[in-house]
Structure formats: C-alpha cells, structure tokens
Amino acid sequence: MLTKAEIEKAVRARKKSIQVGPGLILTINNADTWKTEDEIRGSWKARYTWQGKTVTMALGSADIFGRKKGKTPRQALTRAQEIQRMAAEGIDPKVEKAAAKAGRSAASSIPTFEELAVRHWETHKGAWSPKHASQWINNMRDHTFPHIGHLPVSEIDGPMVKLAMDPIWMDIKETADRVLQRIHAVFEDADALDYTGGKKNPADVAKRLLQKRDRRADEKHSASVHWHEAPEFFASIGDDNAACTPLRFMMLCGLRTAPVRFSQWEWLIEDGSVIRVPAKYMKLKPHEKKDKRNDHFLPVTPHIQAELEKLQQGTDFMFPGERAAQVNSNALNDLCKRMHRDKFAIDRKGWVDKETGEIVCGHGMRSTFRTWVGDVKGPEYKDLAEKTISHVVKDPNRGAYDRAKMLKFRYDLLAEWGEYLTGGNNWREI
Image (cartoon, rainbow, N blue to C red; front, side, top):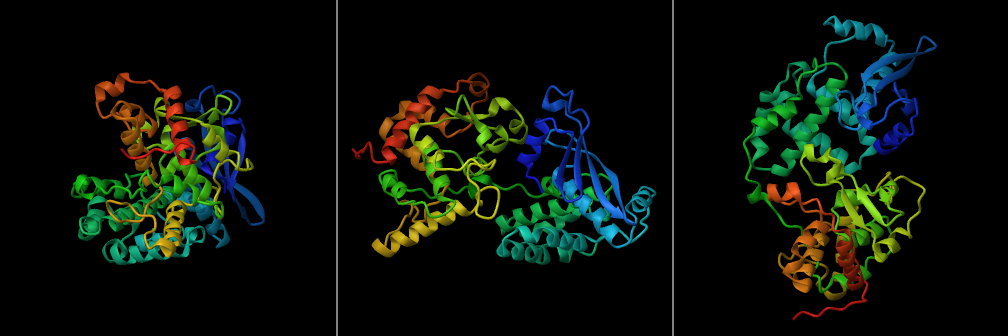
C-alpha cells in the first residue's frame, strides 16, 4: 500500500486515478481544475472479482489531507479488504451493501467487539513486531474483552467503554492510553464497515467522560547527556545501523523524534538551505497542526548538511528504516541503550543522566542543547533557544504577534553548537 506521503504526492501531481493498495483506487474528480488543496475532491473505489468479472464499488468520499469529512486511506483499505473477503466467500458485496442499508445483513449479524478486534489484529499483525503484536491482543483480552467483548459493536457507546477503562485509567496510565487507542482503531474499522451508523467513535466519548489526570504529576523529563560530554557522545554514535545518522541529525538541530523520523526530501526549500517541517508533524494542538503558519523552519548548517550528504535520495523519507519507509520509533532510543551498554562495559558508568541516573534517550538531546545555550551563551539567548527547539510561546498575546523566524540568528547558534559537538569549539565550565 502507498504511504500517506506517496498518496499526497500523487494527488499534487494531478493524477486522476491512483492505485493506493490491492483492490483500492483513489479517484480525483477535479484533478485538472483544483487550485488549492482544500478544493481537491476525491473518492474511493474498491475493485474485486465476482463470478469471473472485475467489479468496482464506490466507497464514498476521501479524506486525503486530514481536513475534510470522508474515509482516510486506512479506513478505505479496511473496507476494500472486507469487500474482497466477502467476494472470496461467495457473498455478493453489492447485495450485502443494499441489505445493510435496509437495516439487515444478508450474510451474518454485526460482529461483536471481540470478533472485530481479533479481525483487526490479524489484518495488521504482519506489519508489527512480534512483541507489539503480542502486547496488542493480550492487552485487549485482559482489559476490554471481559467488559465489552461479547457485545455487538453497534450497541457499544462511550459510557460502556468508560466503564471498561475505569479499573486501569488512573493506576496503569500508559497501558490505559494504549488500550483506549486500540479501542478507537477497532471502532474506526466498524465505522468503515458501516456497522455503527456513523455515530461518534465511542473511544472519543469515553475519553471525555474519564477522570481528568494531573499532567504535572505524570510529567517526566527525558534523560539527557550532559553538554560537557556531548562531543564524546556525538563522536561515539558510529554508522553501523539506520538510527545513527538521524540521532546525529537530532543532536545538531534540536528537533523532536517525530519530525526527525518523518523528515522528507521535499521539505528542503530555498535551494536546500532550509528545512520546512509541516505543522502536522510538530507538537501542537489539533487545530494548530492545520495552520501552515505554524510550520517550523530549520536552517541547514554545514554540519547538518554533512549528515544529509551521507544519505541516499532514493526514497521520500530522509531516514528510511531497515524494514519500513522511515526509521522505527524506538530505533533512536535502542541505539542510545546499546551505546550505554558498550560504554558501561569499559568504564562502569555508561551514558546516563547525571541527575536521574537513567540511560539517556533520543528526545533528551533537546535538553542537552538547551542547557548548553543557557550555560554558555547566557540568558539573553533564551528566546532564540526556545524558537530553535520549536517551543510554543505560552503568552497568547505575545504568540499572536511574534511571527519572527529569526533564521539568521538560529543558523549562527546551531552552527556554533555543531562546531562544539564536532570538537571544533571546546568550552570549559566556569
């Protein structure tokens, strides 16, 4: 199946018909006439074989850029796979669709939550790691199936999901968050298969009903390497796996993990001197992610350019993974852990946060840079440092008026930081 980035690229190229996945086609109805992305009108079609003939069935409008009502690529693929499954089992999808509209099923009753969850798991587990696949289904069996597993998905509402989540919501928070996300994914499938009548996802309703958590109590700072040790850490990263270059890139530019993982060559602008990171990849509120004014602009310093030149431009993503289009979400932290083990075997210290004693992680490199700015450059660089690591201005009045990108000043600051990391500028603690 095409990635979201590949679909968007094909749409922008004004292709009228796009083969998105097996038996799934995206048709752009106004490919020749749209002027802005908001004007693009697309629709999904499923293609399957019935009685020796190729048949096409409309699946409804398409939500391509996450701005309109309609089926997302994942929802459309789920529906297309279900149609192909029915055809393979001798059920006419068009007859089934007409029966569903009439309020009955020509083949079977609406599945229970457990049946649909298991079907979702079986469909996607091949693309997951064995560990994640095992955790996914075990968490559902432990925390959801006993409560709502036996109920038809059409009868489950938000308060029912809330009751299922109550026992774990405050006690094992990380697991509870993951379980709720998985419930949401199952009901997305239910909606794509027309089992829910278009009602609001019960997982979203449950989240609004669940007890509010004190985020400050849960706040945990990412373990970071001290800036005095940063050049040694940087030099020891190596080049023996897919996470090495993105980890150095992260240290040099101060971006978060997500925008680093999803960095794309098409983000390079101004003849390659600037990387424009779309707002949807930044840590922002949902409505802010849709505003292009919130895009982050990263100046490409000589040291960042040196890392980019090591990469091959044969894919959309700058940092492709070993088994996926982009580097794995855990790869950077796994690399940090491996570096810690290697160093610990030599000096019995390893790479740990001097304050917490925890093994350093990829996200902690932002803190390393920010602390270096505060200690070495001084408080007058505070605003520039915050802008560089894309921290949002909390003062609403100031944030509304301050649109300065400060690219020249951020370039100079990141270039100086790059010199320090690579050993060209050695600072000593006062």
